[in-house]
Length: 427
Image 1 (cartoon, one colour):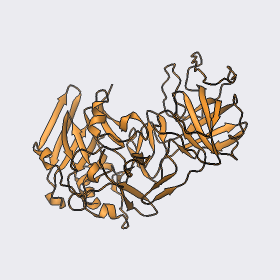
Image 2 (tube, one colour):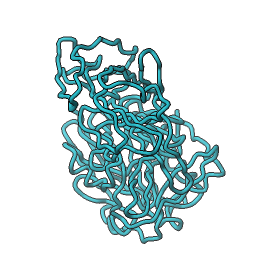
Image 3 (cartoon, one colour):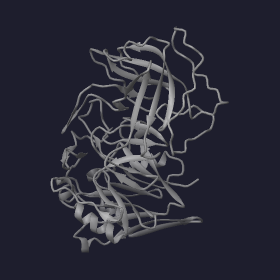
């Protein structure tokens, strides 16, 4: 783990911010000894090309990884395959993912003092394989990897029906309280945690955590039966009521297995098995909901059944970034207040061309001294015929790993990060 104290707060207008840890360290330019590398497959090609940045005023190396959607897909990588699971290098994420051929760093994240409880807390929202894994800490730009669309925020809603009372979920798998540069989020609201969350649930006077097990969900075929053992001495009803899922255009897996309780556009049935004021690790098949004592959930008795509904039109794979650079073929103006994009920094950019080719572009540099500004990125993307693009985390997080080789990292060594974008072959 890189020994850093925090990420600098970056202003982006209308209270929009992003976080990046910028250490003044020399760029690893030796990794650019090979100006061009391509691998052809029977179904297409994945290529890494160099771009001369002189005409754009960029004096550092630029690398563009390009591939066709008919051959390869983008997949989200999570540090140690968990939410708030610490930090991991993009190359390590790729090596631990079946079929992965390339990787870059992903969304922004918080880095705290060593020993504090929230290293690697993600800033934006995360939907992976149709499951809502993390809700945004703040207003944040997002990208739908499946539809190749960008947007200002993650569309999501989650609520729990408690005896006819509809209780909105405030956050999913989000660590609270959250305190770092520019962010002060208190421990409040109705907080839901599932097994991908790697930390303990929060505790505080005046709050209680309800421990549920997932009984069934409407994405499971009617003929399928799933038994989940209950770790409680209380007798719990073994029958359940079928609940209709909201109408959705998302195609969900139907393999006879119980789906995640936060699968988008589905409804799950949960049974309360325990109540506690202690911090918990979320076990597989369990859902923890932390609430204030005045909540309808706080008075719920063990053995009661509730329904959890998750909705989103953000697609099955969605990750955050900042800012949007291109949308529908047009450059998106960058706020003058966004000093992060006005300065030259190492950059990582995700984009798509008009013909549907995906690109992952990195710009080398030394934080605050060399690299590219937002306007220079715009000119680069226009010349590459990119029509949709989102800036990802940059600075010392900037990394490109491909075909078993680390092509570039910006700091003293490849930085462990919270999320990555992985390139994998299509099935």
